[in-house]
Length: 76
Image 1 (cartoon, rainbow, N blue to C red):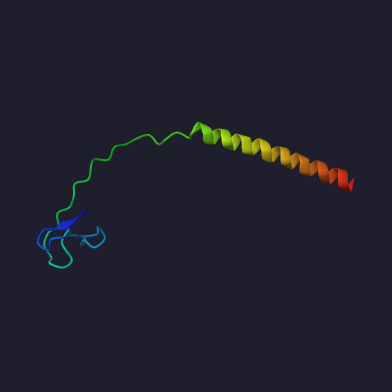
Image 2: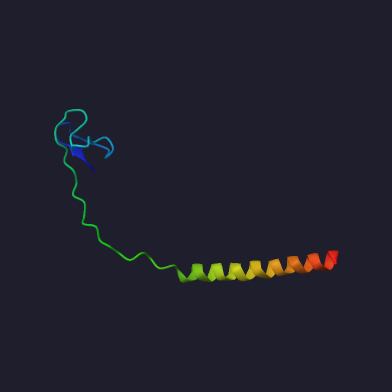
């Protein structure tokens, strides 16, 4: 979190001027160092979510089949 030592307060990142100075006193703001971006692989799709989606597809397919079967039996 950016901090102004002269004003003795913390600043929201959006309030710091683009040149890195304090909006109230105009002195440079102590900006925290950001860690180097570590490229990580995105998390894999969880197996239990794959299972739930597969079960949902099977269930909805079965219900669609029942719906078509009901329409055929009722109107034909």
